[in-house]
Amino acid sequence: MNTSPTRRLRSLCAAGLTLALLMPITTSVTIAEEGAGTALTNRYDPLFGEARAKVGAAVTSTAPTFDDTTTDQLDEIPAPEQTTFALRDGAPANAKIDAATGVVTYTATHDDAGKVISVPVTVIYSDKSTDEGEVYFVVNDPHGGTAKKFTVNYTTTHAHTGEKAVSKAPTFDDTSTDEVEALAAPEGAVFKLSKKARDAEIDPATGVVTFTAPESDANTTVNVPVVVFYPDDSHAHADAPFEVFHHDHGHDGETPKPINPTPKPFGSSSATGAAILGAGALIALVAAIVHFFTTHPLTIPGLPLPR
Image 1 (cartoon, rainbow, N blue to C red):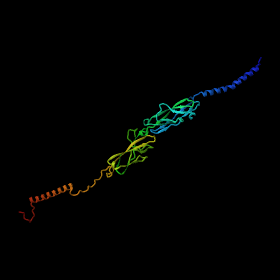
Image 2: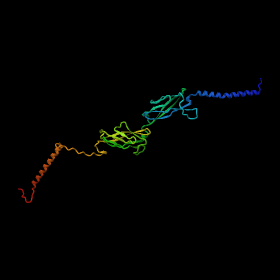
Image 3: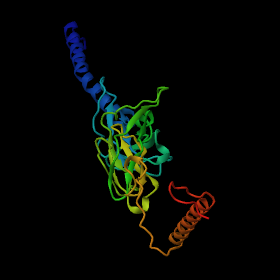
Image 4: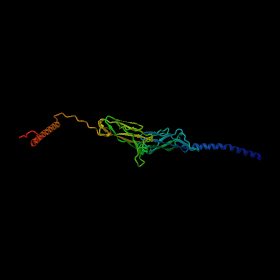
């Protein structure tokens, strides 16, 4: 059967229209299938932050956020649903992690002071794919920073047993210079007594120490231990020395005034010796006078000479 040119043209147009309608649907199905087969580890990048830590104190990090790599911008979105977290091999023994949130808790040791400690973490997505990351803890050095820059100096204070003695405020020497300065305390410094301090008080703002020495401290130098805390979490140790005298000693180190001794009763060894010595001297004096007049007769006008 012959087909007219018009009918053949209509058939071609209908076929073309059918293909045009089906093409978007086919493309959409293909994209959906490709997305369903992509592992979450290829779509997301975990973002772990850092935390500042102090020696001996438990510190927690912030929860990690995630970047969706299918977008053109850096995202900081929460973890995808059903994501869990675990510490990797090699994590410090004093670190632990919240498996649901990814928050890491770490307690720094004295050996960690001044270091950056990394805690390795594994991210486990709901499709069992995984990612890895590091949480960093910057550990403060308690003897670094301001504490390392300055030396704390107290002058010696004279004290007397049973009396309150007040020191002068400490001065500070900047160790970065060659000369020894007597500077005021750095801004924000706070003073406290060490736990070993006794019989003392301190002004937390000025560092002035008040000390009352017991009798047992007489004729000794007592060092009152002080700790200075700075705003950068560093701290320094210093001693406030007190030179202790007995309460009847002259103040400010002067020599005490002599005390009049109690007279000893007659009959004591020293008194008897003094009495004997005095009697002997008197007898000798009288004998000398008699001898003088015997050998040198005294002549008085009008009186005859002795025969």
